[in-house]
Length: 221
Image (spheres, rainbow, N blue to C red):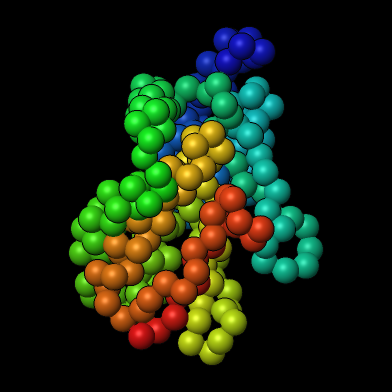
């Protein structure tokens, strides 16, 4: 925390409830709303809110405004600040390793199609956990949420089509530097997942390089 006195950070995390909230956010793949954190910890949102603001004040958390959900005041979502300690829940070498591997793949001349082919098998494996799910759409939304993409479903162009928007990208830092490879990996994961589920097909997959990113359109088979 380069711009915050270390003592202030230690005091902020010294409170038991605040530390539990911070752990919950450190383990989350995406920013969380106050109500989500409160539900996960069995607390009232009014109890959680001042703790979040306290950690925000000392630079441990960043807040974004999410206008989804209709009229009214945008919902605040909290996540760890760029230089905040991850408490070991996300080992610091992993992001560096991801960048190195992607740089190596780029130097080797691998394409987005190559990346998708590699990830397809993993997507099929991941689908195995959702065999009891009533539909591919519901299963894929659950899996994307687990991975931190904060999916949102809207109607598609036809009656049997649904569009899942990726409201948050847990890979955004590396995706912006290596869009073809990272988005190819994501596309492969989704394609393998959908094919393994068997009752839907992908009609369109939009990435960072498209005019209307980042989403996937599914239609029932």
